[in-house]
Length: 166
Image (cartoon, rainbow, N blue to C red; front, side, top):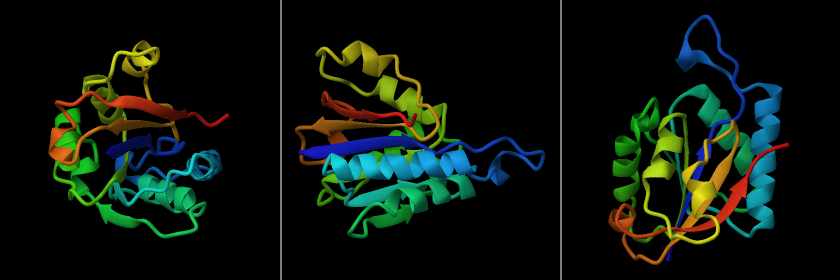
């Protein structure tokens, strides 16, 4: 079984210097800490976290991971910045097979497009998942009955959790 958690970075206001220089706001830090607390309450701690290389995603990771008692492996994935769904999927599919729970911290629109693109088991959550647009600091987890991350795009994921900060 593989668990994929997709997360959008926390609130980060636009700045005149450009997108790469956006910093996480106090609200964004709170959203990220709450997301970490949510994962801990759900007994979900990632084995590996892929994070985009910009400041707002790195700070999202820092705030989120502060809730974890154990340290998750982390890899900065340059390809996640401003990535379309195909690139994000390609990065996920290369995840080592011994990783069972993968968290990807990225950006819209790519992270939302990927969720809509992935095959999802048609259950009572299907429509909700397929129409979901990640709010800042939001996350969704899907469970796959696979043993290789390369199969994530052809196997139906089962909706497990959704978190939105309030």
